[in-house]
Image (cartoon, rainbow, N blue to C red):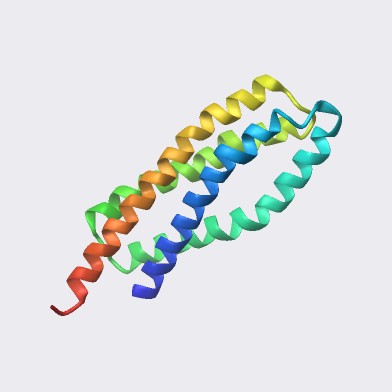
Length: 146
């Protein structure tokens, strides 16, 4: 179960780093591309970022489910699950539809909403990252002989 736990922590922290790069670097650049090349830029961004995000999100949710099934009940880990659910719901119900709108062409109002609402996902993933690290520390403290 330690390997699953470590995979979960690794996937979560890879996503924490990625969400901060997207929030601080990628999304602000959308506003600087210019409307002539935006559709091409956005299509390439979504196509290439998906190859990174999808396997990490899949790994994070599958290993989280395995931890639940393995009865790892650390309170910090349990607290991280609603954050995981929020991130999935936010991704599919907010960010994906906004990206679909932007795929038609640059819209400053949609872009602003994307950046503003993505701060919630950035905060949730960051908080989840802290939760899984504390839970891993507790797990290692309990299973490692003194």
